[in-house]
Image 1 (tube, rainbow, N blue to C red):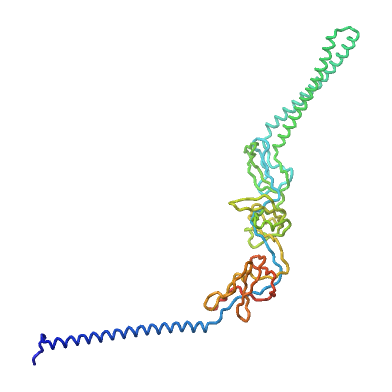
Image 2 (image 1 turned 90 degrees about the vertical axis):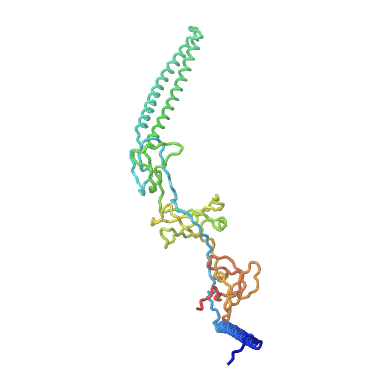
Length: 411
């Protein structure tokens, strides 16, 4: 058998046809596969979309948490912080300079008015007092001498006047006698003035000697003691505080800072309650006794001090404790109350979008109520609030109406 000649025209043409046929078949197969993949992807997408639609159609309607409107009283309060202090606190210093020899009280000791707290060495002041007493004695003796001199001058003047009347003595002697009497009278006055001066010096020295005994001016308790025996104290313009006393701690006061936005609602005799960190689960009663006019400015924040009276019969409270007070500023009786959450709530539809509602006018608020299981918007006018409940003003709504405050979890 003879093989075909590759160089022959007939053989070359046949091979080319076969190649073209093969390439065309390959392209057709590739296009078919691509269309098959596209069709499969489209089918999967449609199936997924259908599943979502079916789930949405079969999903239960959203559930809501509701709270009923009620009628009652609402207490409006103002919260402020401050510190507890004794009703009366006295700082005691030294009025004389000297070395402290004895100290008789310590922290928390009860004291009575007139009780000696400490003694300053009285040696120098005692010596000064004795010197003043001696000066008084000396000047007192001088008074007697001046009186005797005056009596003698008076007698001499009287005798000279009698002799002058009879012409027995010269006029100059009469003048001299009268001048001597006047000098004696002035000497007596001067001596008496010296007596008063020395007596005043004695009183001052005795007073200073008495102040070496530092005594309590009130009945109370010792809050602090800043002196020890042997310590030297100096009286002056800035006398050091030796003791700090507080009057009866069964009666205390709480000074709180009221924000300027709330000060118009605070006045005397309002009820209040406060708590301290030492007793976090307990609150204490108090009452506003005064509101001060003087402003306090700190970092451009303006506050005013209010003073509250505090009963402390159990002596649980101590001066300096930080307290948080809630002052009852006003009580509204027989008002319609709505939970504050209801005014902040907006229900969502099945797609998670807010339910449509008409726009609100100025000062209008909206709540949602369940009617036949469907949220319905209600426009209301909100009044005062204590943070948990809001007064509905001029409302025709009835107590017991369930208003929506939150979505319930349906998972």
